[in-house]
Figure 1 (tube, rainbow, N blue to C red):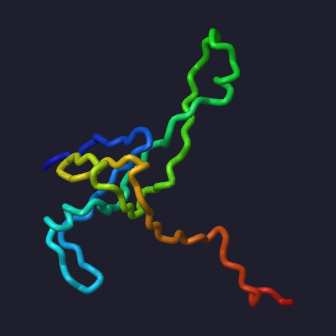
Figure 2: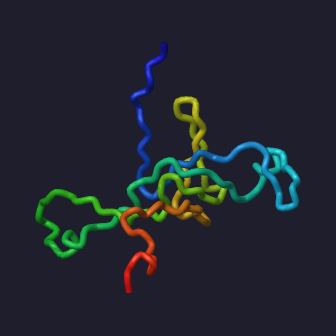
Figure 3: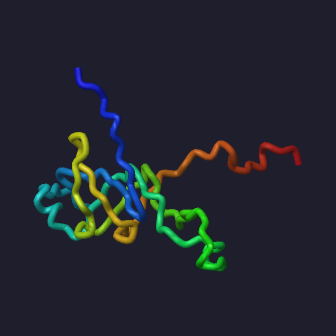
Length: 136
């Protein structure tokens, strides 16, 4: 019996890891396009699996200190808008295809993402205000 892989993928920088949509695509009028027609489109969609830490920026304290001081570098990042679980529509030419443990992925720069579709999160911490719940 094969052991599960202990290897993991870590996305670096301002990139996202996407599982691409495959197969036939249906048009608005109900026609199905073959995979070859879908592959020639300039954009592609897929589900985001993992995101990198973001775009690295220098720490504000590093800018004002004397350059000869030796200190520990502190990595700071501008976080990405994309989140795992989002559906992304991105430029196909910017994506890089990889295969890891038999699964196909695409590595997409955050700048190549055209739009994100995010499912609404169930906010149990802040339920909607309902005036009927209060005696006024």
